Image (cartoon, rainbow, N blue to C red; front, top):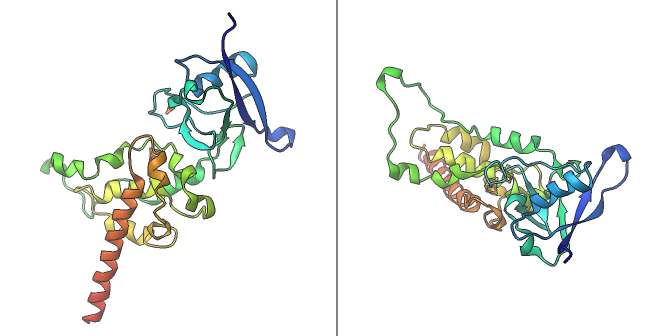
Length: 247
Ligand code: SF4
Ligand code: FES
């Protein structure tokens, strides 16, 4: 009996050809243990070696295999072919990012946004080594632990309509990353981050659509992180307002 197949429609873009991106169809075996990434690897290995895309771990850890599947941002290593049967399955590069080639997107803007939030423990004064480590209780850790689970897959940016319209927006993962450090009891960089992010390209651009948290494969809940950040920003503003009035 002939093996059952499913059609994968891949958006191809080869800049050296000077042509507009166009879909190319490939038939691949419909195996119950294959994910979309397996199908792309099958195409690359057996049908068309010119296909370009990123991946590394094949286990939802490296964050490099994110693509649009039937219009939704997902990790292709976690998307079983059978979920989309009988197909066809449309595979496109992550939305809202410039495309370098085929399914490979340009990530420089995303990385710059992560760096902008000072994603490290900021201290006003270093503690001498002889004073030992900084202590942190499990309760203190649990306050921000979910934000440490981010794998930088950028799915939340592709799901975010605000980032799609305003590329200057810091975006869900960067703001959740800022909160990861703001809420860390060892960190003293809250004011510096607030000065960078309490503006129209930071927390106040978020319209709380919540698509970012829906798309996140790691339950980071960036929408919740931004909501908490907005509350802190509003409290900060009131504090400075009252202080000004009292002078
Ligand atoms: S917050 Fe979630 S969706 Fe966004 S980059 Fe991190 S892991 Fe990916
Ligand atoms: S290949 Fe690493 S997350 Fe999918």
